[in-house]
Picture 1 (cartoon, rainbow, N blue to C red):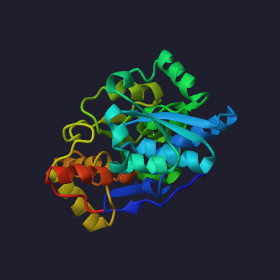
Picture 2 (picture 1 turned 60 degrees about the vertical axis):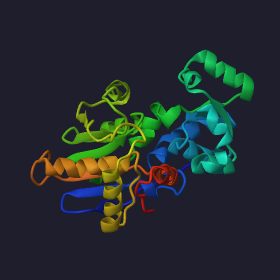
Picture 3 (picture 1 turned 45 degrees about the vertical axis):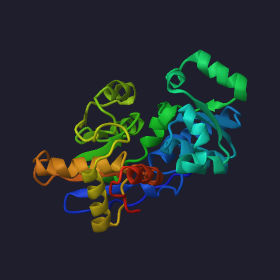
Picture 4 (picture 1 turned 180 degrees about the vertical axis):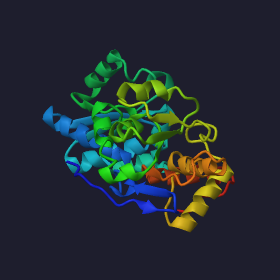
Length: 297
């Protein structure tokens, strides 16, 4: 099973520090490590030998689950959004990696994918694959939130603001639960809108949080040249690589908020680097096709 692990925060400047969750594991990176930890324990407790989960073409969660299953003794099944991807595995670095870890794929169209949480849909999957332990898309459930509660440690109470990117809402929920009520938790969604508030409220036990919805750059997995420039300049200055879907947008947002005087003077900010760096190769493929600048790995 996955071990408890922590790393020292990295100081960026007088006010901003980064918690390097991307260092937890080379392939089970950041918040995916935290989300899978207790789910794997529960799967073992239920005597399951297979994990089934859901994701898209460049899903960090798919890659992490595939490798976690490999090293922890589970067969893995990935239900992948997009029938057309069945013929593009070799050109997709995320799916190629997951397959190399032994993951079996089940490709479905987007309309069918919307039914992934319905009982009849899951029963059909059991008829096809046999018994399995279900890990939700993005990994978020009660056990995932429990794992994410371990991201913050007592020493982190010195920070006034904790910043984290938001996908399915599990990571920020865990951070909210383990934060001091004197701290403000800022979530930076990778998706348009603030509908994630409903999902976060299902798991969060404090009210000390806010979603900053101005830095999605057009929506999930969307990117603009100024974001690529920021990621590359940040890497050059700090030697820390950011991913373009989550952490790059969050850090861009943090420094833009500084420029707009959002943070009170002398505030101390801790930004959670949740990993996701495996997705850069796939994003660079898209950037090449658009003749846009590439992210320098």
